[in-house]
Amino acid sequence: MIDVVLFRREDCHLCEQARDLLDGLQHEIPHKLIEVDVDSKPELRKEYGFNVPVVKVGPYTLKAPIERSDLLITLKAAQFREQQIMSIDNSIASGGLVGQVKWTKSDSFTMWLSKHYLAVFNLFIFLYVSLPFLAPVLMKVGATTPAGWIYRAYGVVCHELAFRSWFLFGDQVVYPRVSAGVDGLIPYGEATGKDENDLWAAREYVGDEFVGYKVALCERDVAIYGGILLFGVGFSLSGRRLKPVHWILWLLLGILPIGIDGLSQLASQPPMNLITYRESTPYLRSLTGFLFGFVTAWFGYPYVEETMRENRRILEDKRHSVNGSADAV
View 1 (tube, rainbow, N blue to C red):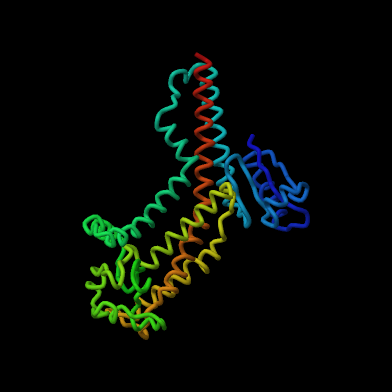
View 2: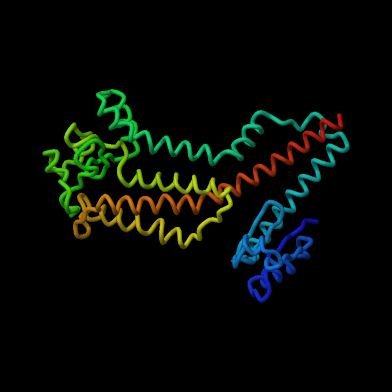
């Protein structure tokens, strides 16, 4: 029989509903219900606050609002998992799996990755967002060939339009189009002498000693990956304990701003020309990009951690089985 832990508090109608649903599933999937009042201990109150009810069944966790279908799937998964573990343990005890259950190099790598995936993610994103800044540095010191490699590599994943990119070692850090309406900055066309509507020229232009040299990733992309990296570092410092942001907040703060800014710009310019022409500013691109990256990471990383935690549990069970098999021999 599986154990089901219901974290609740008094006078909580959602908690009562969750308990009634569990009682209704008792005949279909027998289980032992353990109710825990989150107000009984300060640490529980701090961890759960008003985010109740929460149902935990083995490695699985359900949070409010809790539906009967979700409970049924979770209880069946936990029941099946327990049956599989018991089957392995019984086979080992009887000698049926002696020599069959083995701990492989793949298991070791998966276990390592499940523990250190966040460091891997953060390192990869740090390198990805840092390398484009190396291109203008190399241009500045005259190493144009390796700089060209970086520009070409990132040109596959980014438009690299000069009037939507950062610049280093020049009079300004950005050179927006005139239509962006940014006061106090020399526009791209005036600074470079190029036609602001020639997109291919803007993509190929990397700068000079007066204008400076272009970063090989556009303003918005730098902000997106910078936001992901910042949250990843914060998530690591928190001990990977942060809960995912609600999907509604993800839509409102992460998706909606970048969607409005990016799509309205796209729809207003050739070849679409569907609405009044507009060109976003470097600051608005950076803000919406950062929000998208940061909030998306906040929405996704806690779920990745939950999956990795489950992988660790499964692998620990397997390692326990392997050790048991070795002891049986």
